[in-house]
Image (cartoon, rainbow, N blue to C red; front, side, top):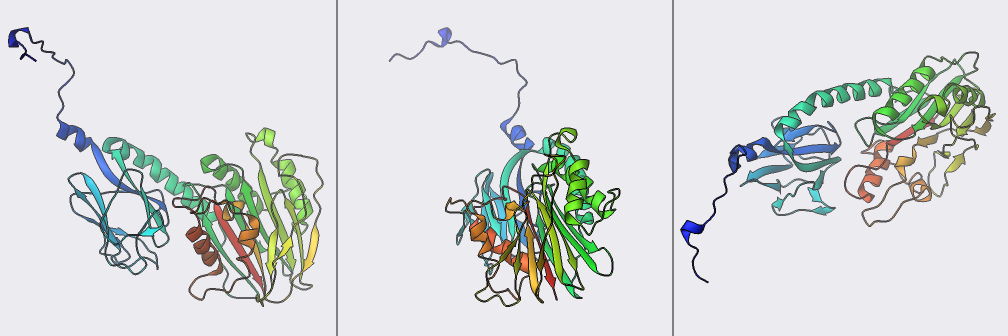
Length: 378
């Protein structure tokens, strides 16, 4: 082929502003997003120096997690490529469920885990990231407010309580509570609002405040069926943007040891005896529609006698509706089998259940809010 005549060559000039490749690169940053664990939802930029992640205060990203080593792993940039390196941690750094033993190249969107934390690597425009910080702070404040409405755990006395709460987004629709109604009655309940995020959280906060302040006129709060009837009339779907919720509500009489309970579209609570060996969880459920669907429905209550030392498990469906790392869909029956397994002296019971489900599920955040409440009756 003959060489082109330089006099016949056509030169095209762009009228767009000239921008260097370096300037465009400067607009993009490398970030780690915490998907699950302490500080969930926060982003940390990877700078020119390696970002060291661990439990000790001297790390660049400190994760208060007993399963995370003091200096667990690091992420550094090598020619604009992010490299993840485990620093000889006890429990390992895992990518797609596999423990890494050599430096690992992170691609955009890749998720890795250390202890109970799930992190994601991403590239983002620095200006847009900065603009989103105000929204992040507002969501963090809202999340803190929701957590402030949850009850304090009770570790002493005749009735012990504990819980684990992990929304799948910054804000969730799960809610639960318990309190002494009077000298003889103890109330406990769990709620699962349809949907996720801000709208679901606003609905659950409204409900929590009604229950905490007992703002249901002419209501006997020791009667579960009556409480559900009044809530059903207060929160009709057509007046709340078609939102509804499921609920399990119980009242324990400390003198007779009888638990009176009712449910609205919620699965059973399960009672596990103090002696777990060869025991089967006892389902506590009476059927009723979702709250907000049928405003005139008459909810009814059931009763059960609670043996000494038994534990009641209340949880949302996000606890068992998971997809495993092998791609299999889990069910209530599979989760129920975990309830009678031996307690873990290193973990609270809700933590034990969460750790087991987390280990089985596919990488990344759960698809739904994860809430477990345990009540032990001595």
